[in-house]
Amino acid sequence: MRSFSNILLCVYVSIACAQNLEILEIPIGEVGLDTIDGYGPSDFDIDEKERIYVVDVVNQSIKIFNNQGKLISSFSIKEFYSLPTDVKPFYPFTHIAVQDSCIYIAWKSKVGVYNLDGREISKFEFSDDRCIFEMAVDDLNRIYLRRDIWGAFYACTVEVYNVEGKKFKELIIPENEYLCLRLKNYRIFKEKEGKGYMAYIKKYLIYGPNHNEIYEVPASNFVECLGEDDAHYLYLLIREDSQDYIMQLSPTGSILNKIEIKEWGMAVWNYFRIGRVSPGGNVFVWTYKEGDKYVRIYKYLMKKDKGNK
Image 1 (cartoon, one colour):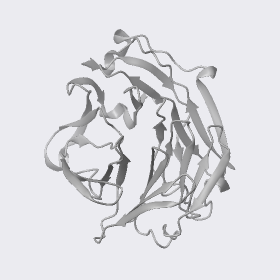
Image 2 (cartoon, helix red, strand yellow):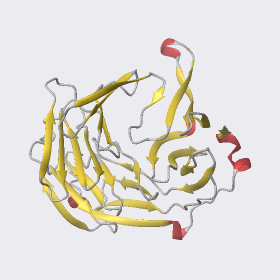
Image 3 (tube, helix red, strand yellow):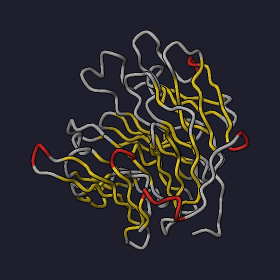
Image 4 (spheres, one colour):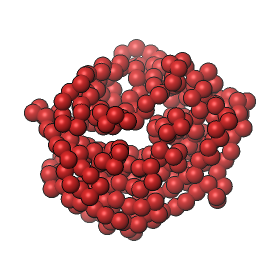
């Protein structure tokens, strides 16, 4: 196990310079950002060609951009939320995942599967009123759904379905696990201190593909898990001394890369996704400040050090 506080003793860490970064600017209207009511895109995903798929709940559509941020296609889904009246008092949890040239979308209590042209392949809906809080799709096109709205704080259930909506199984996720459904080979656990209402998260413990603890991060430094790439490297957004970084970890816990990031965050009510890692291992981070005419996507080009595992 490698401690966060001793990272400089573990491995050489590179800090970003100009050639590590590309900045894409997209007009706010193209991603569906409503500057009056304060709503905007609710989720995005990246495919193997680094095309960007955006959930535009304001215009009830899916927008597809190329790897340079140019809008190349879109299609409508008129069953999305009608903003803003349909989402109060909750934010519209609408999710997207791209796998094998199919687009998976979850909203309200529905899941739809579409091809890249927007043609509906399948759709299923739940009869209860629990909204879908998180979604992911694995290499076998199995759909993982978390529908416990309080699952971020308590033990929760993850349900697994095929594309026709047939349930395979349920997984009970313990209260101390940090749930990131995009992870295939890693698990992250929260170590707490104190009891009852006085309990707080002290640190995050990261377990690798071999089910052993490989790394730990103090809670004050942990911002978000950005997922893993096809080479099974893990990406974290962390904070040190008021500066934010993307950290790239190998399956054994070695720090392969650490890049200082410019900024992150969307000044809209319903946006909760900070960033995504592409299958090829580049990290896309979104940012928008009130009054801007563009949404900026920072694309961080992470080094692929195959020899340092």
